[in-house]
Image (tube, rainbow, N blue to C red; front, side, top):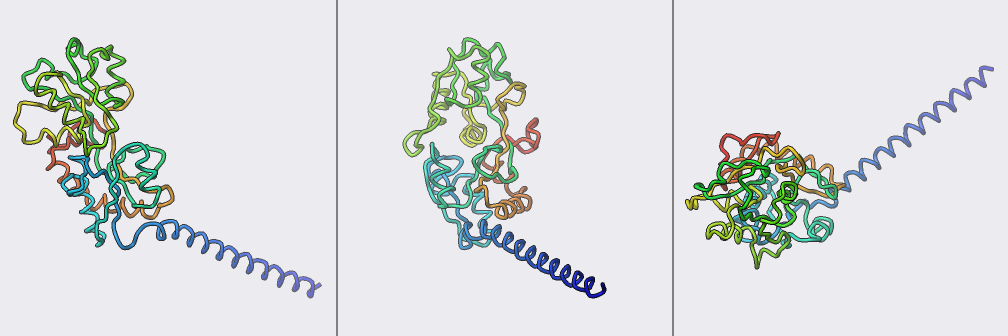
Length: 290
């Protein structure tokens, strides 16, 4: 009996030893695979960014956009050279850049886009209405305001304000500007502001991070009104993140760490460009916002 118990004890010890060894090997392989998903695909020699080469004031090839400045900040933090892959912001942008491993991050991605893995947001901003300061529309804060009736309204086709205009019976008053264009040859936002200045339209509905910098220091009597009081969808305020590939979890955490570390510097860059920044809830302008 003692011999049988001894054999069973030895067998059990060997079984658990082998199980533990197998478990450690499996864990090691899992960790190695997870590491490979990030370390092998994310460059160790450069901070690789994909961006539109002619998307002022956000990004451009000459490096003067506010996303260019944020990318430079992160590259310096990482101690790596900043390397761009330039591609027009149009259909297929993510697939032909980030998913084709031509870069490791895209800045300026709205939170909640399912095709990518998003970092924590690094700013929150609204859609805005731009009007002449002396216009009777200068006090409008929602698209249900009756003062918008009988005015010509400019907006980028397919942008969130369009749904609110449709709901409020304003579609007949719209002058529409293209959404997906090659900004090297045509700038719909700048054309819309030019039309506003010469009276072709009475109000321009725009993405705040584009409108703010285009208006900053112009001194031409145009004012920017954040649209913060809409209660029905679609949202008129958005949290902006950085996009990485779905498997790059370690890289995402690294970028989140940099966002936390550099948040005040990021805010300072955005504010210097005139970007209207909101609190995290998207309800109020931050103290230094224009």
